[in-house]
Image 1 (cartoon, rainbow, N blue to C red):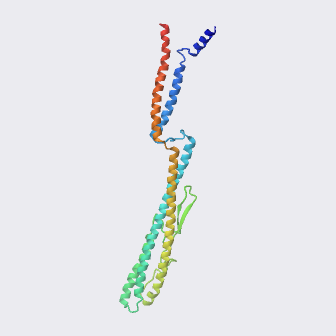
Image 2 (cartoon, rainbow, N blue to C red):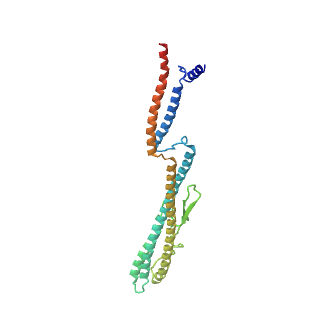
Image 3 (cartoon, helix red, strand yellow):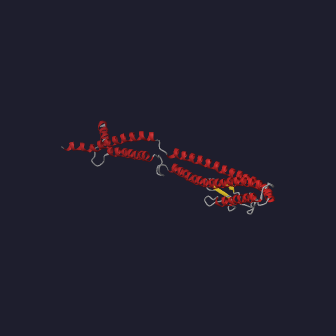
Length: 288
């Protein structure tokens, strides 16, 4: 009786049925799991990313997207800083040209202050002086970049973004180098037509020259400030980009090995499913 009971239990466990094929169901389950892993690995190989969407890993994807937003923000910061630096560089170029003109004007004024100089020669020198004086105005008017002129008094300062969230800025003050101003103190009607006027003009030009050189030093400091911030923004953007890569980039060597392993596992799963599906056919031999 015990032996019969054991046989009955074993018969229940190993029951053959045309309606239910447990082996096929198990084999199909494992094959489906392998297919899902294979699809994930194939996606990593195709995209180069182990997390290419929120479906792969929602938390990591969210962190990566936030960091990508910061990277995009620093791209805008870099563009803003570059524009600001360019505007300052144009202003510095104008200031250097004005400084050179003032040196020439000082030479003309000093020569015209010579009491031994005849009237005709002084008049010729005055024409050159006036041309140099007017050239300062031309330079000032044309020192424009992106709508900003930092030397004609139309702009008080140049401001650029300094943070990805737009809450911090970096600023450099403008330097008004127009004639009759606080920097270039000589007037728009300045001349050296007389010996006395030329003598007086030498000191006025020297003062303006010192003022322009001081203004150039301030602009240079501002440009340096922009340059330092630009370098920092670039490094920070690179660091964030590297961080995103660590989060979402796939290890291609690892994925390649996994792909081959899963392909073999897939083939074995197909064979196992095929074998399991053939099991009910054995029942035909019982009815021959």
